[in-house]
Amino acid sequence: MDKMLVAPHDEAIVILHDDYRVSLTRARKMLDMARGVGPSPVKVPGGRTIVVKYVRIPRSGKAVYSITESAPQVDGKLALKRLMDEYGLSERRAKTALNTAWDEGHRTVRAAGRSVILIQYHGRGANQSYMFSIEEQA
Image (cartoon, rainbow, N blue to C red; front, side, top):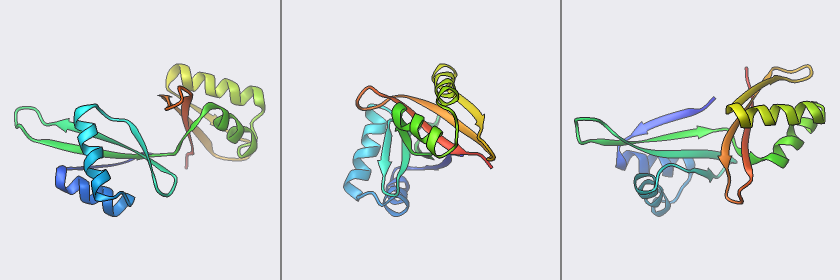
């Protein structure tokens, strides 16, 4: 499940530096990009992915940044391989699950002898490949 933190500018920089080991210069650039261009996924040390969003509070003139940590995003080929190798899904079932996640935004699948797996589609990646996240639900 996604972890989300909300903080004003200076606190967001400290969170990015302390919790996600991002340099202070890069943290400032990430906040500037979120404010100017919009949110985009960023890989941080430890194999994690975060999304920084700029949020303006209506009628107050104040703004905060939300930092959302989610499961690592992988391209479609790696997602297919993980579903087959790690979770024991057949190739047909794994492809069907990925196609449904692409179409509807998410898909849950029960793995052989395991808990439920949540597959989420996150849009196109840097190389125009389809990006997914796969996480086991409790």
